[in-house]
Length: 266
Image 1 (tube, one colour):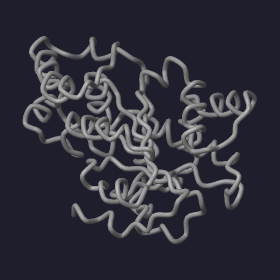
Image 2 (image 1 turned 90 degrees about the vertical axis):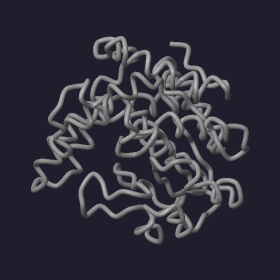
Image 3 (image 1 turned 135 degrees about the vertical axis):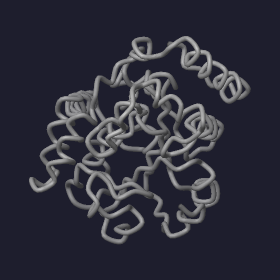
Image 4 (image 1 turned 120 degrees about the vertical axis):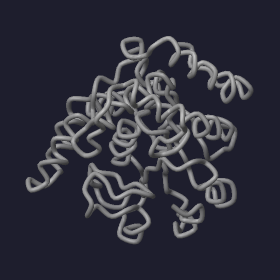
């Protein structure tokens, strides 16, 4: 994957990129922004597909184009997603003003959810959580170092075109986060609209809609999607981590998060 790949993206003022480490609320925030698009005063067309394209990946099906591949066909305001590190998007964000909503999640819960993602029918990881954690120790996770990724997006939080939201804030008060995102994107929402968006973005509705948009001939991927939305709870890591694994993550937090003031308070 080339660090220059984002150079192909032609930024429009209304573009919104959702950037997260994996399993940190990417799809949830994507659906919030997609629902919000209906209230955008300059939106072209009433709706956009449930599946929001990634910059760097053809998912959930191999024939799903990346955002780079279909950018000229996307209706404005365009919504895209990425798990790319900040350095890949730095020029677009800092020099061209690309709007970004970065969602960060407490790392132990992120890794717990990531393990189950590895175990779905597409990745089919054969080991248990402790085998998976060896990949964490060796810095061999598919999308890179989640600690570096979260740290770098957190450090960009003071840019006027970057909004950082914590997954735990979304769980605690979804309506407040919806209102904050709307203000960031300058989309006027009344209380009824906020309530509607919150209701439409609950996990059961998102799971049902994602399964429905996958073609019937992609049964393997349909099965994986059913597992894609897992519990979405805070604190499930306590049911999985051994003490040495907990200590390893705590040391990473001290190394990457503490110096920049990134805390999750959960």
